[in-house]
Length: 115
Image 1 (tube, helix red, strand yellow):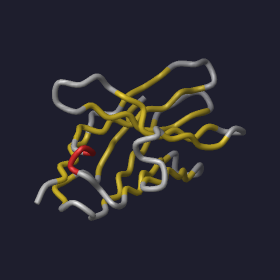
Image 2 (cartoon, one colour; image 1 turned 90 degrees about the horizontal axis):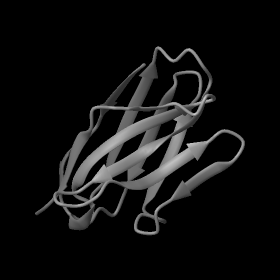
Image 3 (tube, rainbow, N blue to C red; image 1 turned 90 degrees about the vertical axis):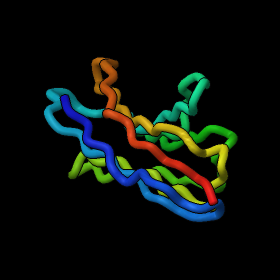
Image 4 (spheres, one colour; image 1 turned 30 degrees about the vertical axis):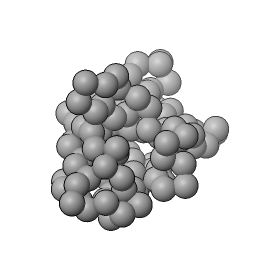
């Protein structure tokens, strides 16, 4: 299984970015797709997840600013990030969970929010 993430970069505070993550090679149905992030010196934390038959959930720190969506046909998950803050600076990792509860990770994409 391969996950290819893209869309990171440098943005000013208050700006927006959209991350994408395309999954390929999964033998089993993908149940969840989402994003974690890890800031320097911090633990990895869940940012947002979208789960078939359940819906979406977000960390409190991004609610109202980030939106996760999924294109099922393309096995791609998106994270639209708005009103970005310096504390959103981190490496963002996408993941998928298949129906056997196996989790796979993307390579990470760096988001830097700075003026």
